Length: 272
Image 1 (cartoon, helix red, strand yellow):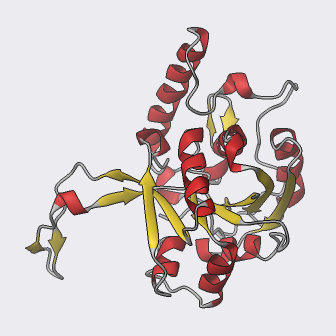
Image 2: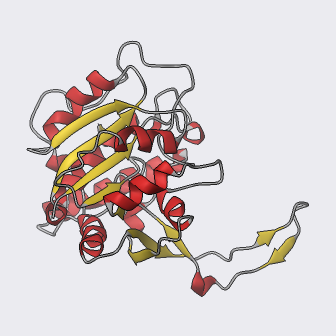
Image 3: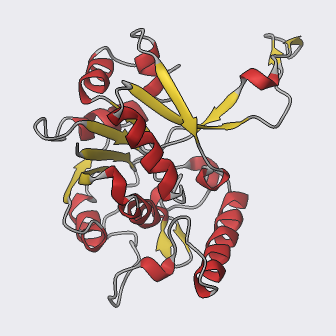
C-alpha cells in the first residue's frame, strides 16, 4: 500500500505577519515547507511515493527546484494553489496519480514539526480500512459557546472535545468525492467535508509537537522545539521529527522569496 501527500502551501498567513507567505517563513534556517517535507520523508512506514505541493501562482518552478533534494526517490509535483485552502487542495488532488495510491494524506505546511510516528499512525489506520483519519490532542482549556451578543450559552464537556491536527488521511475515492461535492466558507478541513457526506472520521493520537504556526510567538516555540531536537540528537536520543541535521548537504538550503513573488493577495494555503 502506497500513499501520496497533498500540501496546500499557497496561503499568505496574515496573522503571522511579514511579507513572505507563511509556508516559506524560516525556522532554524529552513522554511516551514522544507521542515514539513523533511518530516514526512522521515515517516518511512507511510510509504510516501508522491508529494504534491500547491504554492503561490508563479512560484512553481522555483519551489520545485528547492524541494527536490528533500523528497528522495518520491515523485514531486508542484502546482499553482487557489484563493482559498479547499481550492489549493483540489488543484493538488487533480494531479495525484489514480493508480497505485491507496492513501492520500493532506498536510498543512504550518504544522511543520509533526513527529514521524503520528504520520505513520494515520497511514496505518487508513491501511486498516478507515475512510478518513485525523490526529487529535485533548483540549486543555475550558470551551464556551457564545451567542450573537457575546453571551455564554453553553459550556461543553471538555472530556468529549479534541483539537484536530494534520496530516489527515483518506481513502482516495472518499477524498475525491468530498471535494467534488464542494466546500463553503464554513469548511475548515478536509475531514469536515467527508463528515458532510456521512463518512465516519476516525481519530488517532496526535502530538503537541504538531502545533500550527499561526502567530509570531509560534515561531519562537518552533525555534525552541528545533533546539530541543538538536540536543536530543547530540545526546544520542531518538529524534521525534525533523531538524537541521537531517538536511541534504548543499550550499543553499533555504527557500527564499523568488523573483517576481506574487503579491496580489491570492493564497489558499493553510486554513486559519
